[in-house]
Amino acid sequence: MQIPSGGTLHHFVKYRLGVKGVDKIMEMVGEKIIKLTDSKEAKLDSTPLEASRYSKHSDFNPHYNCKMDKAHITMIGTYPVFMTYTNGLAGDFISLTSHIDDFLRMKAEIDEYRLDGSYDSFLNHAAIWYKLKAEPLISLSVDAVISKSWRVRKNQPLGKQNVEARRLKMHENQ
Image (spheres, rainbow, N blue to C red):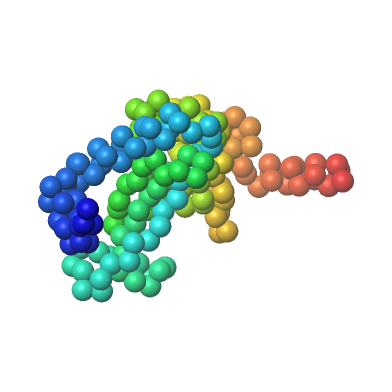
């Protein structure tokens, strides 16, 4: 049997299957992986897909110093179960919602969901916890800032007096 050329495969995937066909195949494979794997640990990360410098559809990303798109890949254990595709300047956190929805649709049972700091937000923590009933393990980015509107106690703003009181209490405990 002769192996088809790369061009033939590209044509088949792009024009015969199309985006919907490839998504359906990915979904079917992902569902099988979820059923067969013993792992209860999921992780999501993005990876740059470098585009041609002549591409009219890809954006220049100053962090990576190239024109690019992004693939957001969710894995269970070491197996990729699904992927979303965004432009090169899209924030990572926006893709998490569709990945959570896919997990729910596939009836995946996970115990923890690991993500890097680019997915860090209170909404993402809550969505993972409440929708998936899993522990959100999201790294803080190096330059993470906790908002000054954060509350020490319910309905108590973090004002100068509260900061001083907490600082004194910390020194007393040392």
